[in-house]
Length: 410
Ligand code: AMP
Image (cartoon, rainbow, N blue to C red; front, side, top):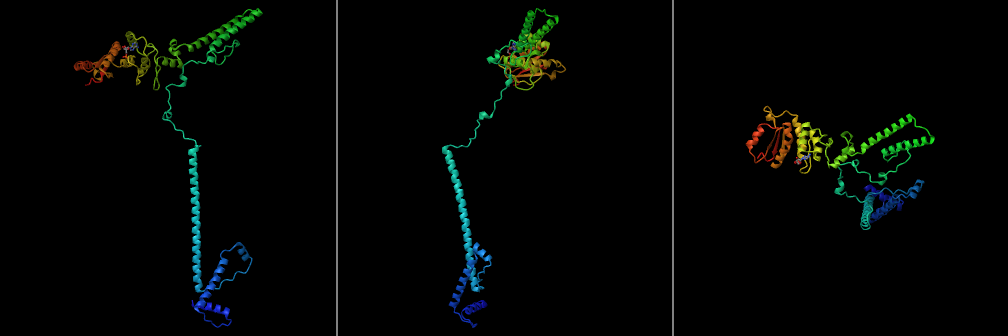
């Protein structure tokens, strides 16, 4: 510290006093001197700090550097530090200002975007939006109704007049068919036309028909007849056909005629008549004796299923013959089992029919007995309101079928 003051005094005095004699400086002088030096330093620093391109270039062009300020004294250091701190503060403040202004700009942009969005939504609200609306699916549309039948099961005739009355071509030259027209009719017409044409030619030429030509013609006519027979088979009503002639379409028509519909898998064909059912001869005789000419629709549908020992839920109106529909297959099954005797009576009955009312239980008993007694099958009904002892005695004697009123156990 001492040295720096000395140096200062030396250098300052040397500028004013050429001789090397030390000069005493007052405090005010020293302060002024320091201030002056400081100003010089600041001026030099300012020149150096923002190196402008022209300046830096000029510096690189070997221009003499500005003279370095003389080494600062201790006081000059302090002032310099303060100045540096102030500079730093200024820079920090400037940086802070910069970031603040950047944040402000960002916030403004964000606000601008939000304003635009809001404007857009207001515009949409008042002018109508262009966005495709999400389709609301009604609950009724969610479930697709699936029909019990398929499109191919439509047995109605084509009502289009074009197909009902097809145009018949006169000349087919004995060959080929026209698509979409009745092949049977075409075949017949072709055979007829050919015969007439041949006869015409022969008459013109005065030639007799040769035996081989006559034979060939006969063969052709027979073939046409055969075709006719075959095709007639397709066109006949199901009631005129044998069982083996029935087509899928015929079965559909048959089911439609009797209003028979099924739900389930591997369903056997319905029976068209008692004769076509697979009931035993005794039962068939019993049915005949009962005076049942034709099976009722529920019997047509349910008896073939019952004979296969399948589980069936049959729905048909009252008095439609439901009892016989389950009783006949049941008796067929029981008839194959050993009859009830003293040895096996404890194992019986083979079948138990539960009914919701006493009257129904008795009706079922009557209907069952009608067929069962031809097969030697015993039927016992258990109903409320009748002697328990008597009913118990009948049961103990052994029976194959028991009709129970559901409340009989009370
Ligand atoms: P259900 O619906 O079983 O109570 O029968 C009603 C009535 O129809 C009963 O008297 C039966 O005897 C009679 N029945 C059942 N099936 C036939 C049938 N295929 N033909 C004539 N009558 C029948």
